[in-house]
Length: 283
Image 1 (cartoon, rainbow, N blue to C red):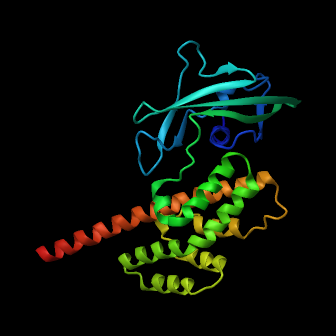
Image 2: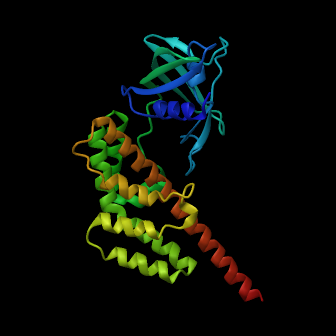
């Protein structure tokens, strides 16, 4: 099955309750439908309360010991579980409903699959990663409210909270970027960051900050700060609850990627700088 189907299913499992998500899958003539097992990702990447790491761990799909399939039917849906591969202690169970509608076409069929998450145990961790909590300071409370809203499917409320946090903490992002530029000795980048700090409009500061993002933090050549600027700048007044939820979720992913990795890169750069100074003293 296409990897993008598993990625989509992972987003549904980790997403809010009672928000149906639809995907169209093309099938060959000999295959009339698609099973739930074929939709499921073999692993998830998520935080573990036992491991307590800065970065998420890998969780593997559990094989049901009483049957050949990892999926158990519990009306009105189905249940699957994943276990942390690192500690093998923490387990998360998802309950979801799958609806399928197949339409024949030349050489096969097209199946429209709608998945709605209807339960999860243990309840989702609402607290943001420690690196984000430290960076946000007092604004962590607003960020947490945004996560709670997102988890319960209140997209408009979640996006409003997330946008407020971005507006308030763009200065903290600039501060971290400035520290990285200082350690790297990049005078031109330091000048750009200082110019951004002087801007009064938060969205302008964010746009300028994107230009100073280190290449190591760009994902597949894409600049996550530029994408953050696009999401925050987009009009939310005419957006649906689902569209707002998708934007809020994207802000969360970008924020957590940036704050965790910026601090990690800063720590590595400082350690390397100290090592070089030590070598110079020895020579």
